[in-house]
Length: 339
Image (tube, rainbow, N blue to C red; front, side, top):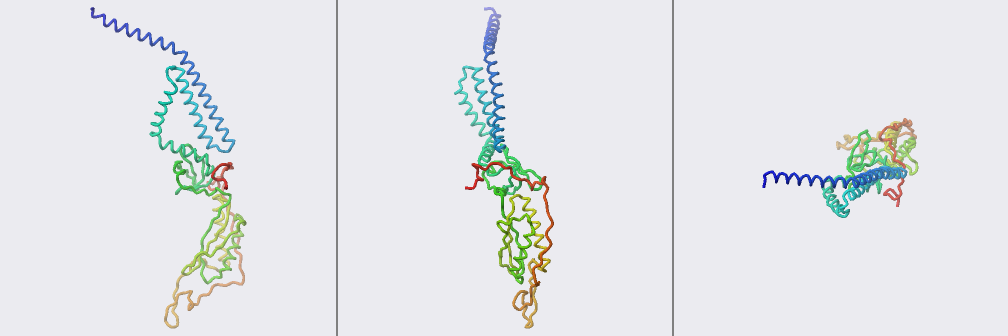
């Protein structure tokens, strides 16, 4: 055998292999064209479905939910189109085998992107149940502010001092969330102390008159002035009133109410602070505390209750984060519905 024969045989085999591959490629060209056209068609269909889903949920005032579901719909159509195009290009590939392989791959992807998938699912459940809406003012742990939007991975909250906080959706879904604006009205309160020497009825009347000067305080239900605690030297009182649930209403009414009460106390010569525990020397040499029967302490008295000046108006800019209002989204089928 000539030494060049094995080399010639190898070259011939390589040529035959290349020729067979070329023939297979040319035979596959129609399938490639059809598969490519199918993939282009499914890509266009995916974009159309995404826009339709997003538009539908925008009309229902559920834009954040539409964002997540439209993205899911887009990739669902893309994956289905990819599977179909692959079976067109390679007819020997069975869809069942591809789905089985996809299932194993999905399991591996699930372990690799566990946190991302958990946050995505938590965001979807939040938007489906909608415990809060865009513009709602909520508290999650130490974070408090206005909900800007719910994204697939996290919920964005703008604090009252203008900073944005990104909170993972799983933290919100599994934790405790206080929704301050879930209802149209809510109650706030302040605490104050007055000496025992002052008449309770008079103190209550002074505070009531002061609160009437604050127009932002709701009259139904009416404010409450409650005797709350018996201290060692003073009476603890709790003043409560109802407001519109937005943070801006709390800021305005608290500031104006405190100022009105303080100026009314001054007009009636009342010191609302805790009295000092001052000891006097009695005639028999035994020290007695101020406020005891042996001590000469009397309350300043006036013939009638003097009204203090009305507190000045206080407004909050519409651009202030505290002035945000919830979107008028439907509560039907959500946790916000009154049972």
